[in-house]
Image (cartoon, rainbow, N blue to C red; front, top):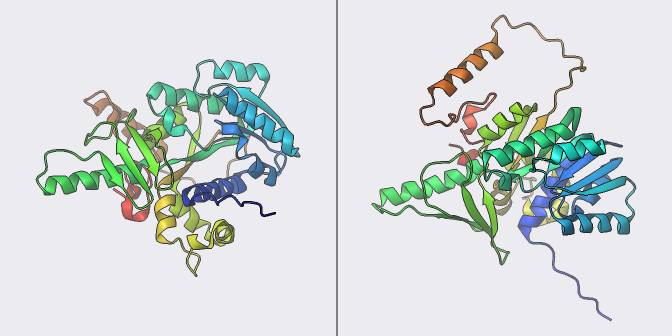
Length: 343
């Protein structure tokens, strides 16, 4: 009797799964308590199992997502304890309910839906405050999101090309071999919040709804929530920085993703370049600071004064793109983006 073998997942899903696995391998450690925001049916519990975490907390706004995550954990008999909570990580009462349950995590992750929280500043702020409230001192909040620098730069190139051709209408879409992005409203300015678009991968029948994530605003809101900026990095650079460690693993997802030297082929580069990592850390006041040579120039004070001056100078009520430090200006005001897409 022949058993039908299901087709492999499409390339963008396999590359996305690789990136999540790689991030978890870097930040997870044995017996850690991890809180998975928007856990989406517990799709990443196998990855946390491989990382030998001690306790898993799956939180999702969807009742079915929480139920599916619980069922998956029970059926596979994971070697860690777990609890599942139906709660929107961007809700006002999230922190109170979590504190009532006494939840404190070493790691909080958000592998999806961060972009949906950027529908408004208030919603994004709530998510970051709630993530911070979950973390133990010294803990990390990390995840992945579509890279707005890549998306917006490609869009601006389309706009510029239209102007050069003398066209009056601004294009509202971006197309690559692997995906199509369509904006709801054509505009040439980058709004900090609420810039909506639809994403459709070539192998998918339906589109996903997203919002652009303005990285300087993400950094500012994280800082206000008590989280220190560690890194925002496009996945192409994330892979290159960790190629020695992760090339064999990515090759296991598909040999066609890499060339003979272990470098990303064009398709892999395009798909991974669509995403970015983000990493923040909750400061630990009891941590022993590293011994460093004193700097006679008070850089922090100078940066803070410059930050305040920029806020006061904003004439349209919005904060300027450069209001958050540290920020690598070589990588553009919106965030990293792959090398050939930087502003």
